[in-house]
Amino acid sequence: MTMTLDPRTWTVKTSEAVSAAMQVAATAGHPELMPHHLLAELVKQDGTVTAPLLTKVGVPVTKVAEKCATALGKLPTTKGGAEPRLGRELASVFAEAAETQSEFKDDFLSVELLVVAMHEIVGVARDEMLAALKAVRGSHRVTSQNPEDQFQALEKYSVDLTARARDGKIDPVIGRDEEIRRVVQVLSRRTKNN
Image (cartoon, rainbow, N blue to C red; front, side, top):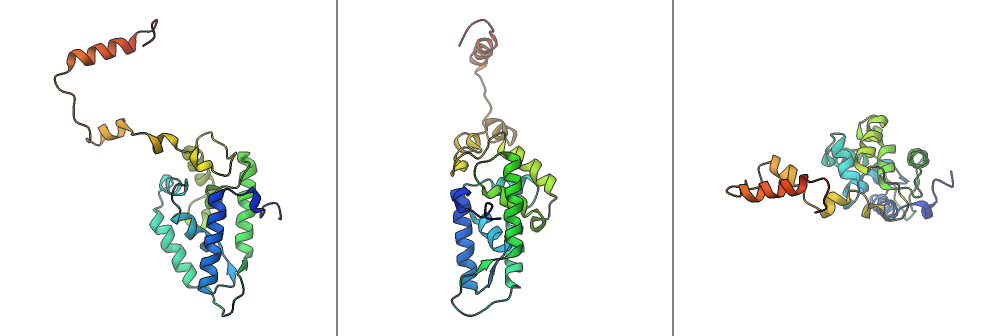
């Protein structure tokens, strides 16, 4: 179990989420750090695969946040300055995430693996979450502590003109038949470079 809870094997975003969850639990006076604490922080993070992953399985991020807030409101509280200890449920989430990490052959434990491990809270089957993760992440492995820079680079740095045209957000090309014909001709040549 010590291997799964080694912060040196976590991505930067995972460390930030765990740290923020600890602060929230301590502020609320919760004696244990629970999966809901962590999931609530994971859905708040920007620049991770969490939101696209949840969208892919058809679960709104706001619904997950509300579910976490409701569950956290029901937790017992204590008074005193003791730091919250790791709950058994969250320890099993980390263990399941570590198993998924080895399945994906990742070097670091990333936030999306924790979200997949909390599939029961999200309300989606694990297999469905894994399929969505593979679709969102592609063939990339987590080989650095900042994997978010690699995932969804196209979505981050480009504009999907096909989707914009489908949505009717691009003006039609009118009166440029000759230019379009020439572009099509150039692009359709097989023997010459452009």
